[in-house]
Every structure is written in structure tokens, then in C-alpha cells.
Image 1: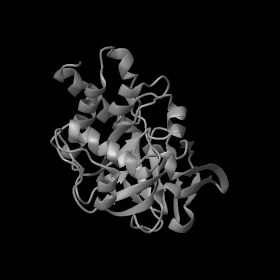
Image 2: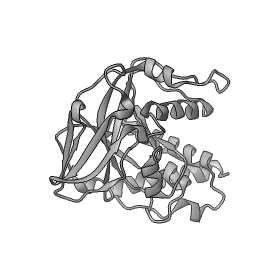
Image 3: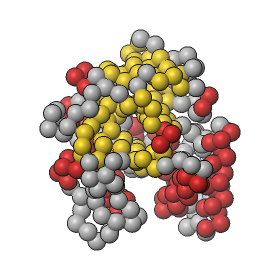
Image 4: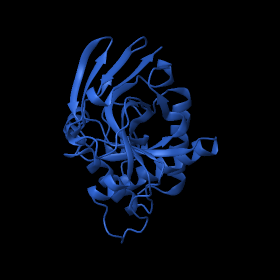
Length: 266
């Protein structure tokens, strides 16, 4: 376990890395005793530093929930990160490519909560998939843009969590649906870059049902004395591998009956 001054120093280092777009060396090699709980403490303090600068927490992201993502990263346990207000973008947006450290894009579903979910009491009854579906106002297609404040090669779970689960931004578009409108397991997407198809996926790749990712998140947050709140957006996890994007690339995701999401990196 790391002491509080070390956690604070890492959080400040990551704030600066985000500002300069210069990834820092791997944390687990510099802090051999670092544990998952240390990483979440770093993440929370990093987010608090940004909130002091005027940002607001509007949701959470869940990462590494699908076999595709676990195979792509070599990490086999899910994680979560924080979504700030300036990370939420609308479909059709032009995004400065150099705002991020060589960004990647994933295909996901976002859950908008209509009421609080879970409990900040670890002894409370566990959240079920039915609780998640009942608390969801709507589900909407989204692209996640991955960022890196810590160097990529050789990462472990402690590096990824401390790096806010690699959350950079999200692009929302398409047609919002209520959970009774469609079988969420079978929501599929085709991901294109510059008119060429790069990835395909089905939402059941996220733990069998995308709402299962939200169950995992609510359970994990309860263990940390936190809960999900009404109005928050929850990125439920990618069901494609991450796609590298370059300056000038146009990204197009087709969710069939749920519509499309687009963005361009300039």
C-alpha cells in the first residue's frame, strides 16, 4: 500500500501529464507495492484536482468488460473511471487529434440513469441486472475515445486504473431507446474509419449483457462507499477492440436501428 503523500504526488503527476500530453513512466515499476486500491485512490484524487479547476463529474465508465478488450490489453479484470462534463461530446464533432495522447476509439452503449442505483453501504443488498434496467431512463449509442497519461507498453491493472481507466472522452449520438424497446444483448455496431470497416461487435460481448457491466460497477462502488446517481451517464464497456485513429481520420459507427455516431479528428 502507498502512503498519502505518494498517492498525492502521483495524482499531481497525472494532472500535469494530461496538460502536456506527455505520458509518465509505468507506475507499477516505480512503485512495486502499488495495489488496486491505491490506484483508485489516485484516480479519485486526480478527479478532485480537475474538479477544483471547474470540471463536474457527470458519470462513470466501465472498462475491460469484454473478451475483445481483455485480449487487446492483456488485463483480465474490469475497471472503472470518472466522466467529467467536458468529456461528453455530440455526434458530428470535430476533435483536435493532439488533445489526446494518440487516441483510440471503442464502440459502446451508454446508460442514462433516471434514479439512484445501489447503495454507499457495503452491507446493503447487491444490485441486480433488474435493478439496473429499472433505474435506466434510456440507453444511447456512444463512442469512447481512449487517452493515455501513462505509457502504454507493459501496463498492468494498477496503471490502467490510476489513468482513469484510459478515459479521454465520449461521443454520443444515434437514437436513445428505453430498455424495453430492444434486446440490448443483440445491439450490434459496425465501426468504420475513412469509409473502411475496421471492427464489428455485439453488445452481449460485455459480460453477456451490457447492463451486467453496470451491475459490476454499482457493486464495486459500494465497496468504496459510493453509489451511482440519477442523471449520470454510464459507459457500459466496449464490445469491439480499440481502433487507433490518426489526424484527419473520420470515424463512423452504425448501430442499425439505433442510428449512427460520427466524429472527425482534425
